Amino acid sequence: MSLSQQVAAASHILGCFFISQGYANVRYVAGERTVNGQYQTHAWLGWDGWIIDITADQFSDGPSAMFLERDSDFHRSFARDYECEPVISNCIAAQNQKFLSTIKV
Picture 1: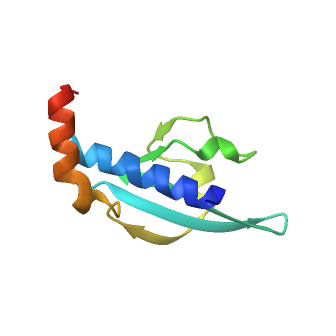
Picture 2: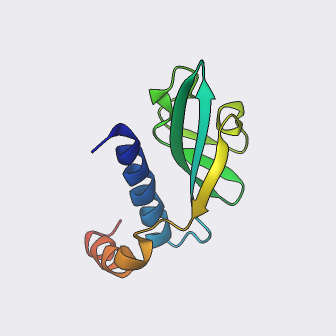
């Protein structure tokens, strides 16, 4: 699995976790940009005006490993080319909720 696929998977899984905890309108966001001639893609979550990003530290100009802010020059540097509900949320939300209630998270 490529790094970009891992980032996408991490964002989808985190989004599904938030949905399973009752958060509504969690969005998976993907963007692209070119920096010094290098094409780059990235993915993160959006929720109620917040940017949630656990993989931005892979970029030299990215924020810390766990990023939670309402605005970001770094994230604005990506042209958003895709936004959706976390893909696997509909498939696993019920099962995930059952699991989480079992372990009382």
